[in-house]
Image 1: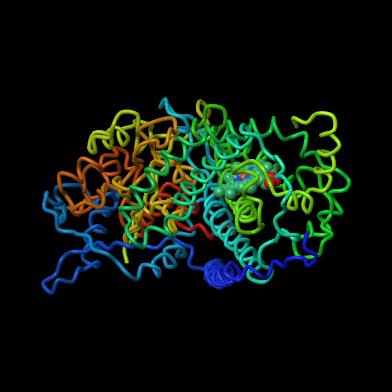
Image 2: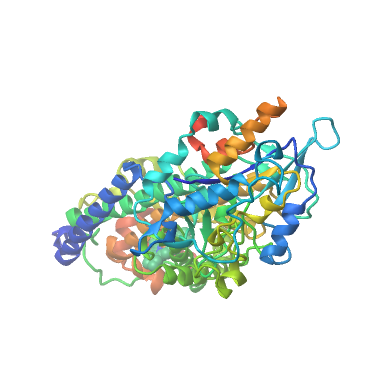
Length: 407
Length: 199
Ligand code: HEM
């Protein structure tokens, strides 16, 4: 064993990549925070109606006048006069299409103007209220008239889940990139060992892990298309977003059974080893020894507390996702509209959080820590890696080896 | 600037369902979906009232805001329309809709619930106005002909009013003053003045 400890900072290439990623992610982050506060999160009209004029311009005023005149035909007899003695309605139109549409750029002002009722309108408008009656139609929710909560749901999905979710994902990735740039990878302090490698995960464990991982990644990517397609894909092509969105909606459903199965089997295989212990607190308080190159990382069994958190995120988070996801596939079978709304919000919020968490996991499992990846790929790890990160596990293995060499 | 609205006068609605029927026929709305329907409150009591409801074409329309594929859009008349070629049938617009307007051809979400359908204010969709294709997907485009939604125009008691919001409000107000009771435009604050509730 070489005397000098190896430093995480010698992974120069990784650190440069980390620095570049950190800068890019910081920019994205700044943009997202700006988006959160720029107050333009309202719906604005993007299409205008108008009567074509000679100079190619559309006259919205003429269209408005035509429709207003038509509206007046609905007035009551006592103020519109009996037909047909009075003036015949001059604007009882034929089949001619005379109002056309065109794109509109500056619709934002309209939303503001519409939202302010004039005195007369304020007087007639009823206060918002939840109103449900009965309906003779055989459809679910046909008896619903008004449900103001829906407006809050929009805030939940569009602002909380989507915006704060983006900030969580990008922000966490930024911290990881920063860590890589400053600290480098977590090295195998004593270098690669000549002693035999240590068996860490069996074939079944690895198969289940990768099945779950692939499923999760497909679910995450397709979920991201649905949550962030408007930002990531729509600027290039709205039609492509429709097609990719359609595909994503289907793939999102196709990959959930293997994910659900994987999470369940993982829970069965690994729960015992992931129960919390008192010692975990010390480990967490010292950040798992990840931030220093000192040779005294806090001892851990097969799964250290960081991994336990990952495990419980996968199992509990996964179960919530599967539960709400299946619920969403069968609207109103066991939940009413209110329940469905919450299921949808929960699914979205937990979904983005899990994506953030598993970006961290994938980071540690690949570039973040030297030697970690092979535990899950080939199934065995370097002896020095095992001793540095999972002292107690190695100790137990050695004691056990005297009794049963198979393990 | 004209901003169109709907209002249903519950003192006049007699739950005849002509609006719903005319709508279904005019637009050949597929089986299993309704763009307009009638909800009855306090059924069987002296306070019984019926309201014809559909998409209200809200201000700051929440459905447009939540659509993950930007298939919904609003026009400068306030009309909210959508593009069925792009819709992925995810159901978000339904959760965000204060009036339960969006409809889907399929009841369970295996990937998709099919292309969403809802009231277009008789204004078609993104296809060329009055085209065959527009008719097939969204039904008749009456607004392009200078006409108003058929549901309101067929209403025999003139309970359901559609068109220029100011005129509609005026008709409604005059009526309330004339008869001396039954004020209150149902759904207006939620649909058109979302900020008025301090929400
Ligand atoms: C490309 C993606 C991924 C890579 C490279 C990766 C890598 C790894 C590695 C190397 C380990 C073993 C760590 C050790 O030696 O103890 C591991 C464990 C684990 N992985 Fe992954 N993983 C990936 C994706 C996922 C996903 C998406 C999930 C969950 C849905 C997941 C769940 C777990 C769990 C629960 C463990 C055991 C607890 C732990 O070690 O944290 N992995 N993964």
